[in-house]
Length: 141
View 1 (cartoon, rainbow, N blue to C red):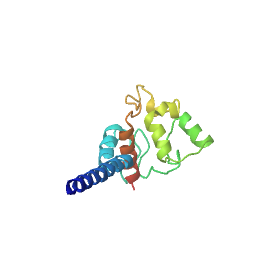
View 2 (cartoon, rainbow, N blue to C red):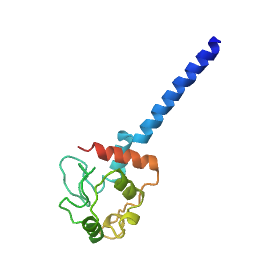
View 3 (tube, helix red, strand yellow):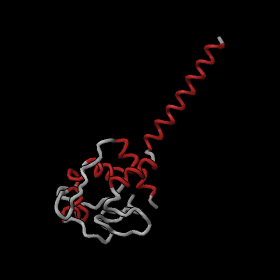
View 4 (tube, rainbow, N blue to C red):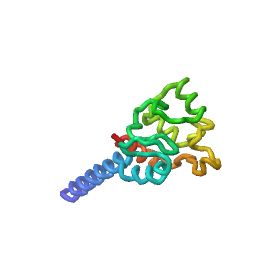
């Protein structure tokens, strides 16, 4: 009988540990998100409190910021969407953008290859990586 109790206790502890790991993955890992941001976003976007524009607008305090409100030369497609259908850069909109920016905002500069814009962003396919990146963007305060 004692062996059954010990095994039950071990199973409960394992389930709690696994649930904790799963919950953390559900929330996103800020450190992994930072690495993803540096590799995917840092080429064009400033992510510091300096709030300097590069090829793209700064991302400091982007989370829950209304789209298109910073003084930046957004593409006509982006500007039109932000004016006609205002939205916040919340979880849902960041997720949609990070999956496929062209599907979210057709003709956006960020996803176009050109002489003046040799690096483009085509999206992040991994849902876990998107969650990590969004967790990092939330931390930029």
